[in-house]
Image (cartoon, rainbow over all chains, first blue to last red; front, side, top):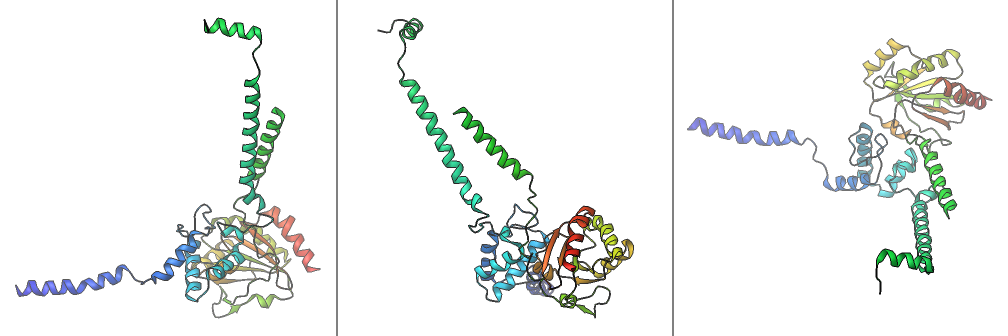
Length: 151
Length: 172
C-alpha cells in the first residue's frame, strides 16, 4: 500500500514535466491572433495558391517568425505589410492596392459582367421583336393545320 | 451582331492566351533600382571573418544565393564557374539556410566559383533580399544599387544576353 502510494505520488509529479515537453514555447495568444489575421491576407511565395497562414513551407515559417518579431517590436499591421511589400512586392498581398498596373485586375470582372449584361439585353430585345412580328396568312394556315381546330 | 460576338470571343481568347504565356512564378522584385540591403555575415570559409556589401562599393558585382540542398543550383553551377573564370566581375555567394559542413562539401565536390561566400544560416538576410526560391542572382552596381534580379537558375542564355552586357554597361 505504501509502495502504491509512492508510485502514485511519482506518477502525479511527472505530469507537469510531460506537459512542459508537449508545449515548449508558451505562445502569446494576442500576438498569435494578430499574426494569423495578418497571415490570412498574405500570400505564401513558395506555394502561391496558399496563404501565409495556411502554408507550412520553410519560407512561410520564416516569414511568420519575422512577423511575430515585428508584432512584438510594436509595429502596426500596416507597417508589417509595408515590410513585406518592400521585399516581395504587391504580390504578397491577397488584396493588391488599386494602381495603374492592377486596374485590369480590379475593373476587369465588372467590365466582363457589364459586357455579359449587354449581350443578354441585346438577345432579349431581338427575341421580343421577332415574336412580335405577325404571322403571314400562309403561316397562319399551316399553324391551323398542325394544331387542328383552333376556334 | 454575330460579328460582334465572334470579335468579343476572339478578344477574350487573346487575353487568356497572353496570360498563358506569362510565368506566374515570376514575381517582379520591388528591389530593382533600390540599394542592396546592408548586412554583415560570417564568411563561409572562415566564420570569424565578416563580409558586408559596403566593402564592394565602387565595384560592379554579383550576389548569388545558393544552398547545397538546392537542386537547380547544380544546374546553374557550370554557368557560374564559367563566369568566374572569365573574371568579369566578382561573384559573392550567399549560402542560404545551409549547414556549414554541407556547404563546404558541396563546394569541394562541384567547384567554387565564388570570390567568397557568406553564411545566412537562419535565412534572415534572404528575407531582406526578397529571396523566395533559391537560386537567385543580383547584379549590384558601383553605388550599391540592385540593377537586376534573376529568380531561378541563371542559364547560359541569360548570362550571355542579360547579365554580362549589363555588367559591361555598368562598369563604364
